[in-house]
Length: 398
Image (tube, rainbow, N blue to C red; front, top):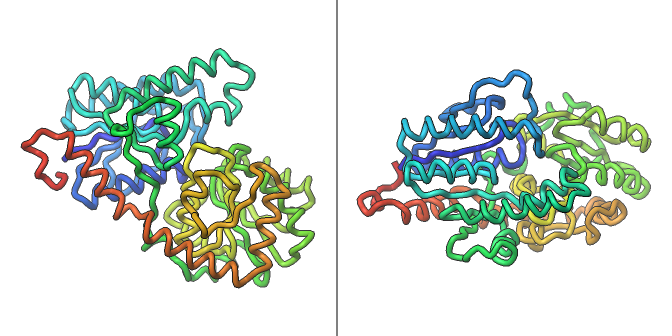
């Protein structure tokens, strides 16, 4: 079975939605699916992946998430590239990621008469509002919401990464349940696991050897709750002296370093910048506690799976998505976006070693039992098959 994946993003750039695309494609290839990815010109190639890029646009080098007017012509180029590739390889399934990928995929699927699967990772209008792109513009917000509703209905199957997203698609966008497939994010439990030796890495980064370490891995922006996290640190340090914060990710490292200076916490925070995903397990394993202060109520929170797989107790805000992932194995700050609430949750797990150990073990077990791509990908392949002609339904994938 041939799958054409359309990724309107600079794949691969070591961040959230890219990790889902990577792990999903990797799992499909293990099942002998033949996957081709069409994406932007920038990003990092992955060994073993068939990646086709648009022509080089030298002035566009943005890797981080968020809307951009440049995407208008980038997506037009991606449409041309994807159609050219589709006519050449003759895929059985079109699989679009994000709303732009779904729209491009819809046009191609109509031309070559193949089914379209749409991998949504949150609400387009909600994300643009959260990023401040629609601030104060109610008319544009309504227009985006209308377009989002139409795009959701273009696909034969919409893949939702959480039950909360399923409810949103059903209740707000009136999408029939039979056209929705719940396909949670997953993790490679052989790569991300407890007890990874981090002695040399800890010395390399100059982390205090006798202090507990709280780790964060993700994009550095307000949307991910990084401002709130830094404002939380002085409150934690008042109660817990032997703690250090390791903040890993990009962009705006300089901006947040200056914010840390302004808060008087520079000596208690280390910023690493961008982390190669192939080394993410080692960096996460430097931690005694993990934190994800993400503010979104609709998007998945993929970093949590990595934390859990590495056996770290995890502190998050109390949102439906976080509850679905962590269940009883998380430590929840009840007031989303509130630094004092997040600080209390961190202090609780930092000062109770028995609780931390128990949650780490339980979190690892939960992710192994419920959130691996080895168990999730076959369900996706099964749904793919249901849209193939009878002559191909008996094939495994290729």
